[in-house]
Length: 560
Ligand SMILES: *[C@@H]1O[C@H](CO)[C@@H](O)[C@H](O)[C@H]1NC(C)=O
Ligand SMILES: *[C@@H]1O[C@H](CO)[C@@H](O)[C@H](O)[C@H]1NC(C)=O
Ligand SMILES: *[C@@H]1O[C@H](CO)[C@@H](O)[C@H](O)[C@H]1NC(C)=O
Ligand SMILES: *[C@@H]1O[C@H](CO)[C@@H](O)[C@H](O)[C@H]1NC(C)=O
Ligand SMILES: *[C@@H]1O[C@H](CO)[C@@H](O)[C@H](O)[C@H]1NC(C)=O
Image (cartoon, rainbow, N blue to C red; front, side, top):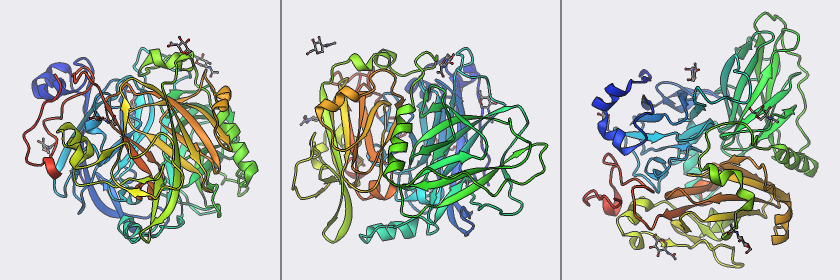
């Protein structure tokens, strides 16, 4: 299959070749990394059952983007499958540049046989992120991978350089493939329960013979594992036989380095742990099992010692309990995750970061998820509004002054109104540029939720059982909550986040559970800078396709 092209070009060469893209993104001093990706169908067997998967350059999971803070990333994506496609870079903030976010509201899809070149800068960010398709249910078939952002060479990281740095992309998996799953959802039914858990595209049970190791460690050395939940819906608990896991990074923030025996990771989340090869040299199991689900699905992978020759013990460590005790356990673990305030690292918006607890909240938005049947079909909604994508990307409609032909602002109110009928419509909520807001996620359903916000990181200040009231603010972590971009909400519980809407653009707030997002549990925040200035937002890029009602309009430069 195609080759991966990855080159760092010296500046003079870049200036000659890519003057235009230099002008449109980033800072001239920051290096460029170029990638060429071909997305194709190919056979994969994550659970041992061969099926049609979506490969990138022949790979599943897709190729790694390994870059450094402030690098400019250029990815030329060739759509060689038979359906329109987009990729998103979850957690990459794309400052001033929601044009490259790869959500159906910000871009026209890349048509089959076409290519599109994403250009963005990983400005002031570090850590572990995932990319994946946002179109149809493509993610159910693959197309996902990791994006690692290293600290710049002169910036110290708060731990010794690990001997190796490995990605572990795990999550629930369906053997049916995206076309069948999409057909089920389109017919108004649920896709039901996943068939198992995959770990880097494979699935093994305890005792499986001749299992290839996930990693091979040398005695005494320390390894960084970047674990991401790339599943469709299930939270997962992961653990390693006889080895403590030191948490060092989570969704782009260096954390206080606590040690854990097992960690709950929810859909869309990435965490870096350090593991030291300090046990008897032999094999050990890395175990991943589903959480808060009626049936526990488990897979293992082998962690090998270079000079060991004994198989792993069949006694795998147990997961935490599944009942309300398990929820309390998981909430406690969430509370133990703290931001390391003294670690140096690139941070977007540093002034907002350090003292977020002292900023006055200008707006409180309470969002409540629900599941219901509308006209005989299953839908999911946020405050009674179930989002649908249209033919015209919402951002393009807004940019061309044609929003009123495509959507209504603010169908989602700041608080759910009781007893309203569910509205199925494109859903965009206005946010005032630079406002500091509090968002409360209320989950009155019996299933756990995970939410993700594009374009920003936020402070995950609280998760509690029960119902939120203003008095609960007294229990917020206003000092060292982790700055991140996803948050889980347990059944009959709430979660609170805080962020500053300082990144102009059209940004998706969505359930990270694919069935729920596909059937409407998402909306977009429109953040417009009244200055209409290039200081705040880039113009529509010259390479962007136009489609829908703006298809034949001239290219517009709105900001100066
Ligand atoms: C990834 O980037 C880091 C920092 O530049 C470098 O040390 C490392 O060798 C790279 N890894 C790979 C696999 O290219
Ligand atoms: C498509 O790929 C070609 C060949 O690499 C490139 O020249 C062109 O700019 C790409 N088109 C877009 C829209 O990115
Ligand atoms: C936080 O980072 C600092 C600076 O790198 C480091 O010395 C310290 O050990 C870290 N603290 C914790 C609690 O992890
Ligand atoms: C925040 O609000 C309080 C009470 O209304 C006010 O006294 C204070 O000056 C405000 N702080 C800022 C930074 O605006
Ligand atoms: C929402 O934002 C749009 C675009 O900035 C503006 O035209 C519209 O008046 C706003 N609507 C409300 C209800 O604030």
